[in-house]
Length: 195
Image (cartoon, rainbow, N blue to C red):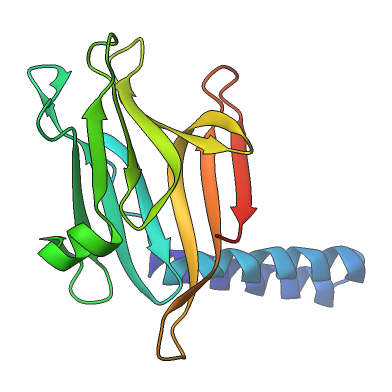
């Protein structure tokens, strides 16, 4: 709500500037466009931060978010279950909720296994999309990370957006967007693809 008030204040400010010709009209129009585009994030909220957060998935169908956190016990990834997957149901009351068995096995669940010869490191894939494998481990500072192929290189995955068409009998994925960080440079990385 605060973001909407802030955006409304920005818009009013831009109109005042335009009215008194303090900015050229083209610049004012550009600033208004940027402000309106930034309001789009209200539909897809981010889950609250967590020290064990690996990444999360937002979907075009509603505001609910699937969250993937590292399951850390005594400073190490849990060997039996290194990733905890659950919902934030923002489209309802904003409650945290476990995945159902069907969601875990057919849609949002992961398959993980220990990497031979590399302690505290796990590889795996999404049960619904097996084409790209990822790794879960802890970085040099002990923070958990998920390395995922983005633009052909293993990058730190932070967020996934899935555009879905559910207007037909079978739901289809229009495209997937991957947002991450380069583990060496720290720069943002991005890829959009159709599965």
